[in-house]
Image 1 (tube, rainbow, N blue to C red):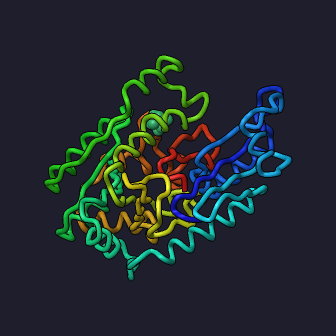
Image 2: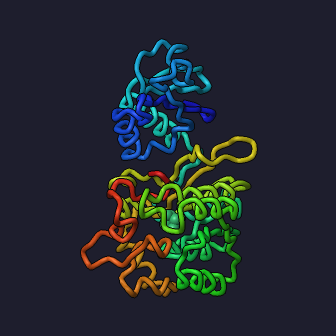
Image 3: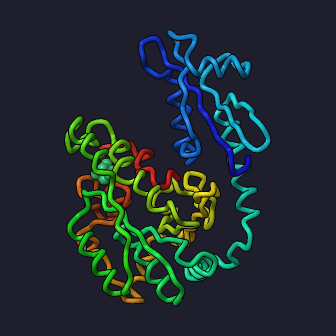
Length: 330
Ligand code: SF4
């Protein structure tokens, strides 16, 4: 699959208006493997409408049953009728891309990877800073002496301590942090329609899409690469096979080239991060002292007990496999 790959999933909608159960299972299967973000479009085959877009696609490709996938890439258009088939194709494509990443870093320690990325892209590689222990990336970047840029998403629901910590970091390193806000009309429309806590009722994805995912797209619009503090141990179910360097098909340069996503902490654990922060006397978000391990928006984050996984402190009212905000979908 080439860079211009576009994947359409055709789902079946029952005459009751509900999606078919198999379609939901298939979506969950892809989400569990971190592949759902690669689906560009969902089209419905409406049981009560033989002219619906999904049935037309089925007809065009000689497929009798939804769900199925139409993949258009440099090699043409082809169809996968099983999610497993699609997952295998996507995984094979990802390995090919990773293997062919030019000049990949020769060491997997975070300092070498941060240097590798900044030597290639400088400030065109922006560091995603959440205001938590991912400050380690800023410390590593500052130590290279190379130019770099940093952004943070202010969702409007962050803890005051996190906002204050952004200023601490800004001052300590003498850097500017590009703060990106959600679209005010989109937030207003959501709050008008559903109130301020709709995520507790129908899940966090809608709110996260408005307050995080869309602003991320703007934050990356003029960049060529970005750097994250993702680690496999943050969520073994969704980040277990996290690569150090990957292409990010969801974010592209203005001329259509997918950004490179660099995950320097992909071989580190939480313990490694905290060892580094202590040994290098790096300032940290004061919430960490109060039992908060993974820190996000205030209404969706709580402290965890010793021994509890850090993800238990995020969106705890939802199933464990759904606790991703959509920024990474891994
Ligand atoms: S973490 Fe919670 S408040 Fe923040 S954007 Fe997601 S759902 Fe909304």
